[in-house]
Length: 369
Length: 122
Image (tube, rainbow over all chains, first blue to last red; front, side, top):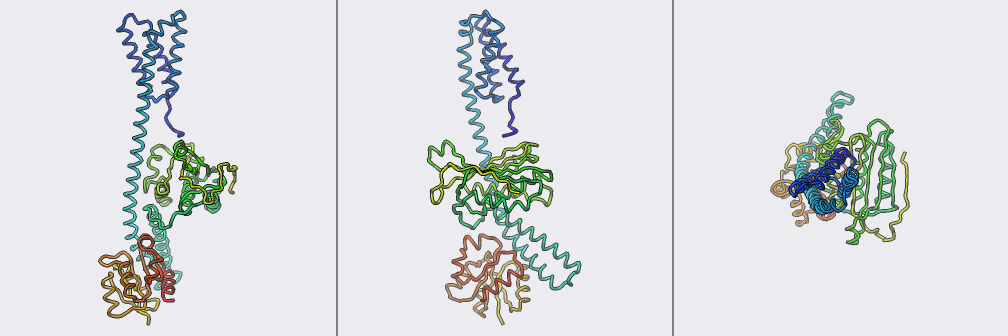
């Protein structure tokens, strides 16, 4: 991720210096107690390294660097003295460190999985609620729209009343579209999934979409593959592509910018083991304003929007989240303020219906003007 | 004159539908659920039924199934507020076999209604 926190060079540098000092004290310790104290300090520094999440290989370099500093400061120091006093304890410390580091990674992975579970539970609850509300709401809208049409008969043509009626109807149609999206979010989709060829579908969708995007937004389609099949409803794939591209265009705003839509295959280790066909990865990248981590965390929440009032319902990405989950896929975001955003969607790849395609697709670069 | 029976539990929506259908030149009677609709049909058989799907007591699907069992032959337009009630639990193909000639998802326009009536009475 573009904005992942990394350890600053200065703090690593500080630890290296402290480490070298502690090692020096260990090597020149007057007695066993002094040696023990120095080594305890060394292991405290090790804990700092865990907190800073420094990768294992860097820790190795850090040890090496500390030893080099020690050797430079004391050119006559016998190697045996170093080996006896610090090599063995340091090896133990390194092993302890690698264990702790792994535990920490596992803990973080568990927290992440729990957070995702919690998010999908929340979305499901809202989905059930949405389906219930949608039915009643359509009854209400049905009466508003119906009576407003009947009222048309009573009012003189070109009267202000007729104009007001038009506004009532336009607003009601907007409400109707919103409810349709709510229903889609509630996974109330009646169509049956079929094998869908994604490359052609994404290309066609982008051609259609081009006209409704701002002139400044240049859309490019880069497909690493000739064809890719997934099990879905074509409208679901279209909805995903359109929604992500519209969001990308919004992120770019009125200034000139680029939207890059990509398609490729990805294979993970577990796919090879299970002999599954892998994943189709659809990515939509923009060089727009990007997102803060606060926005990124809430981006899939229903009704969360950063758009101006009236410009967005805050349901688009919730719907996509629901759709991708429904299709057995996953969605990731890479984004940082000022650095644009990249939405990555991976859907389970389906063997082509006629089983003639192979993995050696040519690259297609196209610009849709 | 063509008689249309409108079945809907929502008072305001039903009033709107009555007005719309009357303005199309049909005679209208009403019922607020499936049971009352069956009672009304026994009194006088309509030429067309426009029924909501989700209703208390006997809902639209039960009404349609019961009329199919009686082989009433009355053409039916099914109206619903949610897609699920028409398209998932209630399959359109099976609905056609039971006398449903057209479906109208709420909200709909007068033109949608005209088209559905024409389709149902064809």
